[in-house]
Amino acid sequence: MSDKREKKRLAVIGHPVAHSRSPAVHNAALAELGLAGEWSYEAIDLAPVEFAPRVRAMEREGFVGANVTIPHKEAALRLADTASPVAQAIGAANTLSFEAGGIQADNTDAGGLIDALPGAVRGRRALVLGAGGAARAVVWALLREGVEVYVWNRTPLRARHLCDELGGKPVKAGVLDLRIYELIVNSTSVGLRGEDPFAELPFVASDLDEKHTVVDLVYGAPPSQLLSVAAFAGARTVDGIDILVRQGALSFEIWTGRKPSLGVMDHAARAQGLSR
Image 1 (cartoon, rainbow, N blue to C red):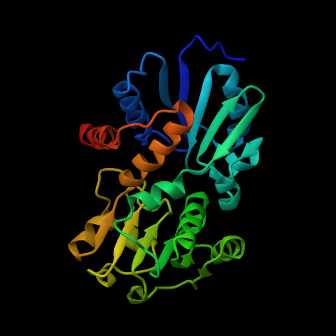
Image 2 (cartoon, helix red, strand yellow):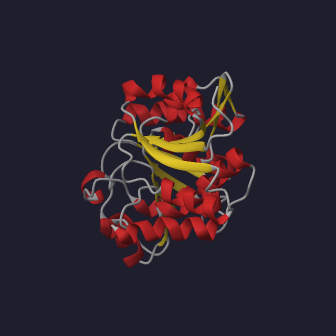
């Protein structure tokens, strides 16, 4: 049992995780609310084999909660003792809370995505790229908003399994015709290490135009190459920081019971990018 008089610890867990701006975002929110003396937020890099044993020990180390990112979101749900209905429905968790004798799993990715989208999406057709934990939240959230969802993955069988579980329709491998979609969401890790998204994703840059809204969950030195090209083509864009801030704010409220400033969190995330 952790000593409640000690600083309450929070973290983001991923592999890799050095690029994460979550520590800057959450520590800025804690400071703005006058909680920096009582709480702290850090990044922890855990390989998949390290994930379960370390997370089980975190409550004893004074941790109150943790965000979970690539590649651990599905493992986080499996590890938890209890889970929110949303996390159970999605089949992945990005938020863990540690209490005496138990781990609670939640998913704020879905709510963060919907909060970040520019306007209503009901009745639109979406192409979701990826089939991992982040993609599961995207597909679940969009389907609940009345969107017609199609899913592509480099391994087609994974896209099919995701659609069998959550809904949506898998698309075949090969170059896709973007003219039939209005919303495109990149939930893969393509771009995280600076690779050319158009060499990895199933469409060409010239297919993007003003009728598209393009969302990229990856963030680095914003905007990403995918979003830069989309914006040049006239598309509306939503970057990964928009979603990071909104899902992070929902996690922050779960842990602290306080509502943070989205403006403060957004500024901290973008300022960290400028300082690199």
